[in-house]
Length: 234
Figure 1: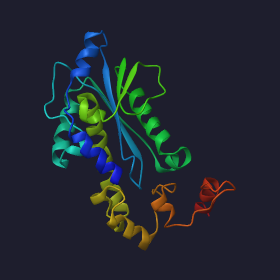
Figure 2: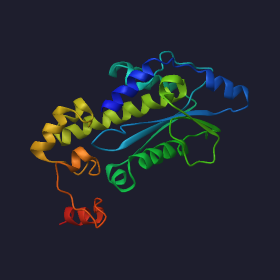
Figure 3: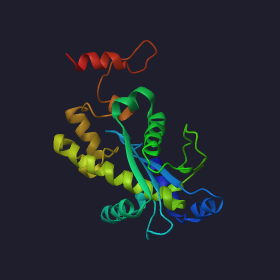
């Protein structure tokens, strides 16, 4: 959580502009997509990713890193993005896959899925920090969601979609307070984990979760996911 806050503070010093998109269009790229993920540090649920191709003819004012925006402002901007973008998509990778492949690879997979869902397809990718295994020209950018409008747009639609899902999950698991902390490592969430234990949608490979539930380990000391699944099916 501390790293998440530090990243947000660093990103706040940057100016979110459309300069890179304009430069790439001038070089002949017609469908420049911004790509970002959200929920990477959460203890609960899927990691989400967004991909957006903004229209140069239908600009959207106020685009910025989703972490820097109030929830109601994100909702307004998400609606404008969906209405005005050339193309947009949201994809997710669930907690079970995160535990299998690790959060970094799951984040890459979610972003890859989001890009592959775009129609029309992107011919250049501007990505927040993480390179993707796609045969498309791309440029990863540190703090890209605070520097690039297309990436900011991707972060906004992904964040709004994930927050909506967290509200649904909150109805299923009201004792955890998911609608408030969105699954992150907060005192409220940790207290609930201590009291009730993790749910099937918690990320078992994340230490704050694993520390509160004795999951089976394999011979290498890693989570034995097959044993966990067999136990859950009994």
